[in-house]
Image (cartoon, rainbow, N blue to C red):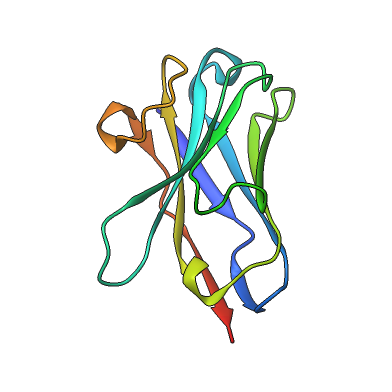
Length: 124
């Protein structure tokens, strides 16, 4: 069965960096598009970014553009979210998700499978 396991979250001071990982199994990783979302307390789930099957295309939410970078290693069945210049507003549970086709759509409805999430807390 499809499994997505996020890791790398934690507590970091404002201005700091973190790299999240999402290890995938149960499907042919290189043939699927991967996305990242986040959910902050009291807010709706928010699109963070998406990466194409090969990693050659990426798209980010305006709120993270220039600070977050998504990459993937198809040999390791893993997608990454490198985050720099973190701010308290980035505090959330971060989720990776799978979709079939690359799109700049920010809708979570188009993603088929989700990980359990990893908590990122940014202190001021």
